[in-house]
Length: 497
Image (cartoon, rainbow, N blue to C red; front, side, top):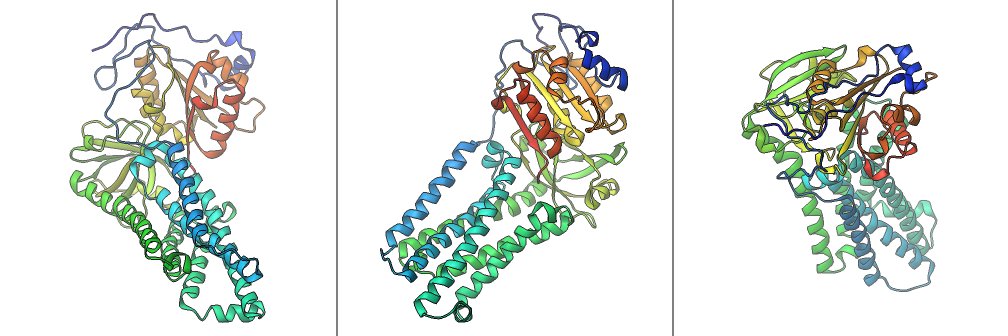
């Protein structure tokens, strides 16, 4: 069934009326263009489409989701509860050793709570991932990790100074005495493991290590958290009362259950229930392949266009790593499709995945879906392989002719992925399609605010979905804001995993 739009599609913008756009087109040929068919109603690639010129409110059965504000409020409330727990047990004193000890106890409790928060953020709880977004969670995790390491360092220094002041000895002697306690030694080892994770996550180091190495080192977080918990159990703030000890233990147990369930049990259960296997691997261009995965009852996963799964292919040299890849097409006929660009050893090996290979897929994750839409007109802005979730949204977002536009940024024409599919969707849906080509350091910037407004004079009236590499996404966001798009209407997901 199709629903007629009230008016035919608007004409494409005339390049001659925009000198900057005309100059750009003269250098790149037809690199930026708008494809429209002029019909008043359009069919979809899956059979039929419902379109409307009224504000869109998509009613679908969706999984529960927690908003970023709710999650932040919960974390801050937890900080307040930890401070209250410390304050109830604190004994006022102005002695130097007591002041050091008070600071050490508070920083230690906050560090322990911070470790739990970091683990919770990466536990892949669907309600959190769907509401907050995996990219934002990753940024919170990275920022929180810096605070946790700072608190651990502060706790250690304050505890050492307090012990030295209490014993009336020097710092070296106090260090030697403290390391003789099993609980203190566990804390030192746990802090060392967390520090190793932090060092490998620093941007300057992260660029020099493989993803596999980074992931392996990151697993030390669990050992570090376990050692820290063992240390806390013998400390006076936690072990000082049965209620405090029970609450602290239950908090750790709850996070541990979430981690085991969503990072261990759920992927295996989904693999057994849906029997996911590779059906096809096909080349899409230089260094780019699409992998089609087929299973049983895929619709039960309720995967939405714009979301991603974490994929683990059970084949030699691939089984040990799970990487996030977005769906590059809507779910259809019990199949899922991802499109991957070779960017490392793991992604290069995907080209050699054999049909029939079993797959563990955890998800779906991500908040870059139709749920975030607030306006009738929509602009999809993609850079590089960030086109994959945008391609799925380009096919499925309910829009009247002329209300949906896709801008695809790439350095050169040969880097455009899924181009034929995008052009077909644009023709069928009477949607705008622009390929913005050129080096990022060239004299003309196709992502400049004036260039974007030349292509879409009513740009400020659009919802914008943005996905691409961090540098491109940051530059695009800045241009959109300068072009008048409100911050609340820019929905972004960048590759910072």
